[in-house]
Image 1 (cartoon, helix red, strand yellow):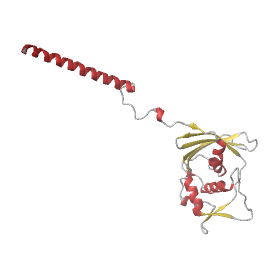
Image 2 (image 1 turned 30 degrees about the horizontal axis):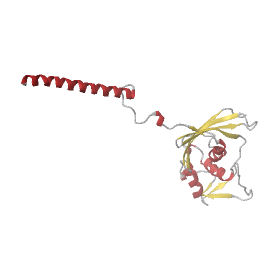
Image 3 (image 1 turned 30 degrees about the vertical axis):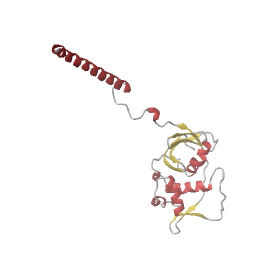
Image 4 (image 1 turned 90 degrees about the vertical axis):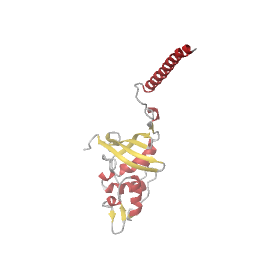
Length: 216
């Protein structure tokens, strides 16, 4: 009996070694298959990344977000910091939003000077652009003695249109074109506007604007 026990232990050890080797090989194979090259897989896959979604109601995008910037000439040049622009442009932005709505333009008394309290205008503009009060008060439209901004008049011969827009998470990218006043069809400028939108809050982030045809 003793001789039999001596022979049994080597056989048991051999079986255990073979079993453990098989498990290790199977685990290595699964790891390699999970990534294709043996590397650790990332925490998320490309299917979980944000996907761009096209916007269909371009006229609404134009009226709400683009038209005031167009009238204020904010989209007439490229910028990634709004304080690269003239402070007058942001006074004109406020003016365009409140007096030049393309659907319901406001009636104005040409004989009377119209002003807006500095706090009112600055709060609205700063909620949509990353600019400071000190920057805005450098505008020629600002009257420091009265603490108001004077509302003048806007004009321009060219026309514009939003030709495309896409969502990517909370970012909206707007593609636009300017048209020649001679025929309203010849593209004279094109570009894209980048925005952040969350509910009713939004902010303009940057603009790329390229002159296509220079008017005589």
